[in-house]
Image (cartoon, rainbow, N blue to C red; front, side, top):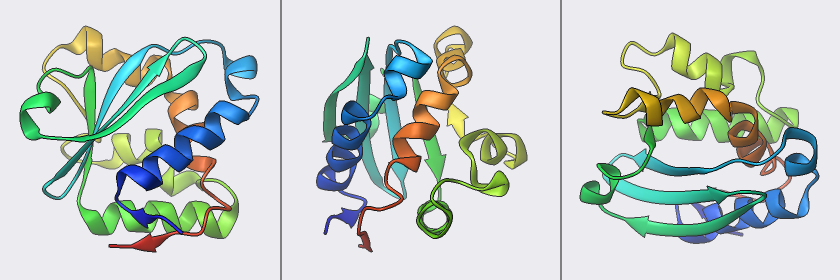
Length: 140
């Protein structure tokens, strides 16, 4: 039972997405995604038809990825719990809704063209998180 957030949790999510039909349905995805939860940083790389890398990293690396998903820990927990309770994110907890409702945006990046990958491949990223619905998760 992986704890959120951890490399093990993000890797389990990656393994689930790689085994699903998501890439077959949605097509390829190429993006280096940063995830910030409080003072912890993770990187999840999508390359063609699979997630190829999951790593714990640092703030300096977040300056280099295509974009960074940023929420406070309690918001991440609420999103994960909503996915688990409903089998997928409900309207208020989809990545797109969280991004639109946030005063500071969920997806952040200095280069708009690279940050645009969040919108271009949004459903793939949503499938990544929705795939954790049946994953037993504890919160660190």
